[in-house]
Length: 426
Image (cartoon, rainbow, N blue to C red; front, side, top):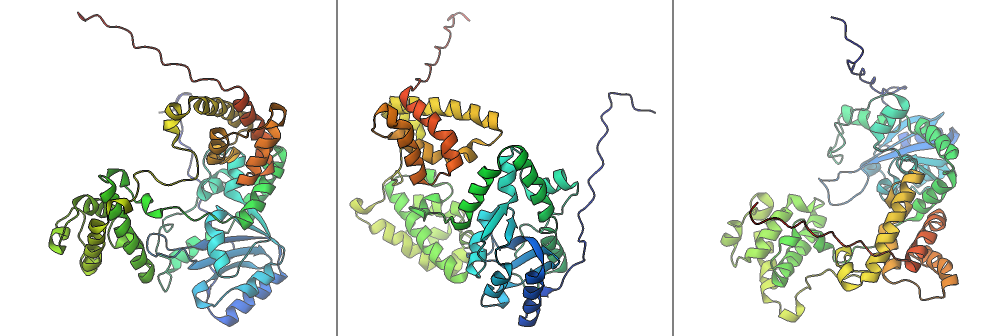
């Protein structure tokens, strides 16, 4: 039976991306590395790079495999664990542009082995600036190159040795078309008038290092279920000893005891190993093997005097939680509402996600405590504060006028309409 005109025909699946040059051998000897260094130095154009870590298996975020591809040099798969460092390879890169996808994830582990970019192009960030709705590598390859990618090994334990051949093929494919993606996205950035935005963002990524987390134990999943300051102290003690133990064993903390077990034990505060093992979630090899460690941590939490218990709220040098602004400072809340509406409109107009226009925390900080200057100096003062916080010039040019205007003319949030009265007889 012939389909009528309204029948929706499913598009055929995109063909699988394949390796143009076949799978190269893994580089794990000095002689093999020297060959790669020479080939890369003799190659031309930008260098596609990627790194595989063992997230979910290891405590460290080190690279367990590094993939690269350059015109004239082909693809190389390097085992960084086999070498003290890769500074010779970094010298071979010279001033060439690196192409990475989600560079902020890979640059720290590449830096650990002596690989430091001098120029960068981040395909994920470029796609965000261009307003692509989905920016994963596989999605971009399908949309731009018209090929699909296998992703079944993305969560593999890359610290495993030897690495299976299917894993290596998956890894090699991650750099197969980075240069092609870069060329298309670069042309689109130029056409959209966003090339300078991207240049500033990429330059920022090269030297960016995230600030150390304040009270990292407060990121324990489910911590909102901790019942009071004593329980929070127990979470802190258990998290601290678990983190130190995980680091010494180079395993993820959750593989010792999960966060849910930490919260359950912190609320119950059992006084013995037997009672602790009866607590919800406290089971498995890590719970049993290090039982004395967990018991001692809980003992310390129980013994803390009240004045040494952690506060319920997280310590911060920034503004309070947004949900409390209306009660604590209605004018600041009005400033924020005004700015948010304008930023949403700008985001839609420029086709850029709100969070890429400006780090939300930067806007909140300036709006909570605006500069105390004359009105005609406000735009410059806001620009200066955004610059000090770390905003890029293109972000400041777009956002400082919006923030300054919200400070000058905050529109209060409209009052909620009262619920309609109902007839008792209804």
